[in-house]
Amino acid sequence: MAPALVTDDYYAVLGVVITADTQAIRAAYRRLARVTHPDKNPSPDGKEQFQRLQAAYETLSDPTKRTQYDFTRPKPSTFSQPWTFGNTQQQGNGSTTAEAASHEAERSSRARVLEKLQAQRARQNMDIFEARRAMRKLEVEISNLQEEDAVEVRVAASQTSWWKNVSSFIFGAAPQESKDIKEERERKRLNRNAAIRIKSTALLSKKNSLSALETAAQSTAIAIDRLKQQIRLDEQRQEAERAAAAQRERWEEMLRRSREAEAEAERERKRQEEEERERKERQQKERERVEREQEELRRRERERVERVQRDLKQAWENSEQRRKERERREQQTKKAADAQKRTSKPQSRPSRSTDGPQDVCLHVGWWDRIPGRTVCSICSETLGKFALQCPHCQMKACAACRRKIQGGRGNVGLGH
Image (cartoon, rainbow, N blue to C red; front, side):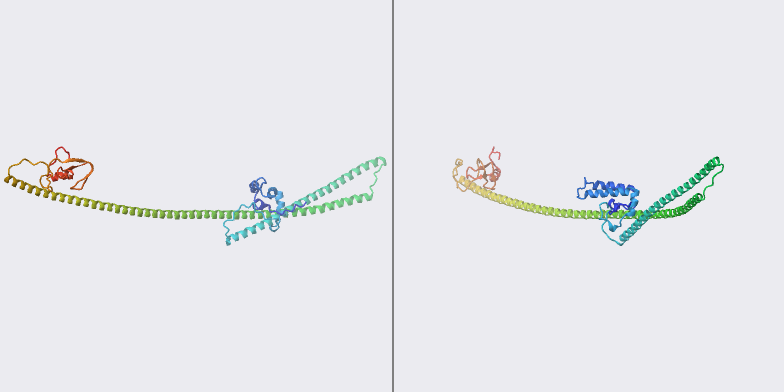
């Protein structure tokens, strides 16, 4: 019975190469079954994909079915639709260099050669199976003919012995066998011998053909094994190249990230330096501003001190001038008094009332204490607690100015 027509590439459905063993096929099926199962695949054609996956696994996991499938496997152009679900190989960065194209062409060529060898091996296995079946049929026919010949000889011998005994007992002599019977028995024997020789010759020819077929099948199997080994070596080499390329990409990515990190660190350092420079400039400007303000304050303080010193000097000069004026006036008054004493009789001591000129005051006597905030008439200093008032001219002054005016004298008990 001819196998059913297959329009799917079961190797592509499972995502394995045509040289994959049973363990790789089982692992690929288990991995894809967890994804394509209808309970986990909500796509509309999820059930069809899972059925196709099951059919591919059932065919490729059975050696007999796999051999028949390899023999009847369609060409790539006759597949019903491309199947890329099981393809787990990464395509890299998409570069199409001449070396990659050469490797791909070589791999495709070896795959085609391997398909042809597998198809040839399948045909050889079918031919070996048919040859062995024909040999078994010839051996059975030869055995049947030999058995018939032996049976015929035994029957003829037994009949001859039994007939001779009966004839000799009844007739006293054994009857002779007819000529036709002998010729018919001889003809059958000759035909059987001829058939045995012919079938033996055919059996020998089939054995020779079977030996040649087995030798050719063995050679084909050796070629397939060698080609599979080459394909595996190529796949291992390509896998090593892909791993090396991936390693290079990882190193390049690490280097790129390292350069980016260094550039970012450099930018951060420059930014920090710029911020530090701006901070120092701000601090310098702030220091300069503070120094200017302090210098301005010191200048104002110097001006204030100079002004106060000038005011104090002016007040002291005014006070000295008034003191000298008072001394001159006192001397004049004393001279006038002395002259009057010499020219007139002695009189009693004048009272505190201002009998002399109104513009002359000696500031003698007890100065009254005036509480409250008052300004000194001599040094212009503001007195916060109290001031002293002359009893004659009513001038208000501080204690220091009063002592200067009186020449070091003062009221006893004032504490000023």
